Length: 174
Image (cartoon, rainbow, N blue to C red; front, side, top):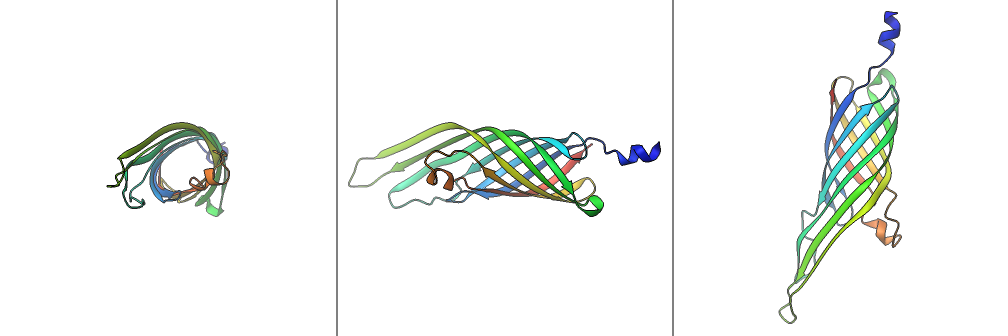
C-alpha cells in the first residue's frame, strides 16, 4: 500500500517567472507562467507576458514614444520526464489575447509634426515548448513560444512575432 502511494505523484502548483526576447526589432520580455499539474503527465497553464521596445531603432526625425504589448494565454500541456526525473520536456497548446500599442512622432524641420498612434487587441494562440531542469523545489526553465497567429499579411505579419525565447526559474508551491 505504501509503495503505491509513493509511486503516485501528487498534483503540484508551480510559478515560473522569466525574462526573454522576441521579434524584430528585438524586444525584451517579462513573463510569468503558472502551472498546475493534474497528474504525472498532464497540466494546465496560464502564461502572462509584457514585451516592450527598450532601444529605439528608428530613422532620423522619428521618435518612438512607446511600443509595448501585453499577452495573456491559457492552455493544456503534456510532459515527458528524463532519467531520475531531473529533466522535463513539456509541450503546451495555448490560446488567449494580446494587446499591442505604439506611438511614434516625426519631427522634421521641413515638414509638419506628425504623430501616429495605434492600439489593437488580437487573438494569440500557438505552441510552447518548455525544458525544465531540477529535481526538488526549484528548477531552471527555458521556454520557446511559436505563435500561430496572426496569419494576416503572411509572411510579414508573422515576422515580427516569430518566436518568444524565455529563461527563468520555477518554484514549486506544494
